Every structure is written in structure tokens, then in C-alpha cells.
Image (cartoon, rainbow, N blue to C red; front, top):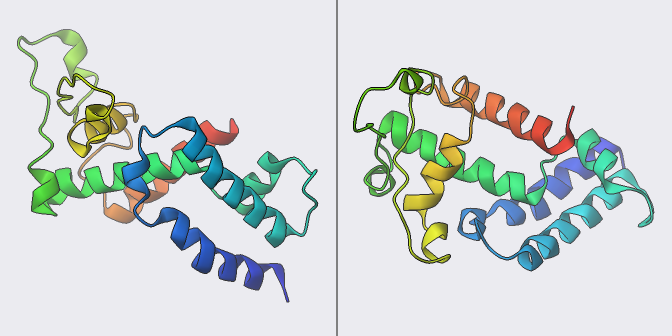
Length: 169
């Protein structure tokens, strides 16, 4: 069986399970992230037919798979882009709002499309979409958060950015 076929099967069976509802894992414990990362690492070693002693970073980079933490941020950023640019789904669009500064500053023109990050009192509250979406969105460069982009262009730029952040290209 060729590597491309194995990669397709692995991505469709296990990769889809890793991505399913992973946005709720934003801000979860390092222990939970590490468990999912071990699953992805094992999958990468199976696809590339490497031993468990081989270093995993080059394998993930070669497969163009984002680490779990970056996949979670990717999912939240895509949901936020859809909510901001199309106001759909409406139940998520209601949770995010643009940041309007109290007074006009020169620095405010440098970062358009900023979202308002509400204050939260608990760590659990910081995991809610209302707080997580603006936090992830505001950390992205303005070349990515341009709401005039198409969804496909946004996804492509976002994955490139997260890939470069994860693997320091």
C-alpha cells in the first residue's frame, strides 16, 4: 500500500476523530492535550513507517499535520472567521463583537478587525467561545484576519501561519 493511501486512510479515520469537536478543548489541561498528541504522533509513525524512537517533529512537518494545540486554534479561528465575515452561524456571531476603543489612538489603525475580549473571572470562563474566539483571533496577524478574504484563502493563510509557528520554518 502506498504512503498516500495510508495517509488518506489515517486522515479520514483517526484525523477526523481528532478534529471532531476539538474546539471545546481550548484551554484544557496540558495532560489532555498530551494524550491527544500521543495519538497523533503514533498515527504519524504508522503512516511514515518509523519506529517509536524516531523524533516526531520532522514527521509531522513532512506530513503537513498541525500539532493538536494548533489544530484547536485553527478550528476556533475558522469558526470565528465564519461568524465575523458571514454572521453565520448566528448563535456564534452573537457571541463576538468588534473592539471599539474608548478613544481614537494612532495604534488602533495598525490592527483592524480586532474583537472585544470580555473579562472573565475563572479559568473555566476563559474556555468559553465568547472569550476564546477573540483571544485566538486577536493573536493572528492582520493579513490573515481580513474579513474580505474568501474562506478558502483564510484557511490557507491560517494553516501556513500556524504551521510556521509550530515548526519554526
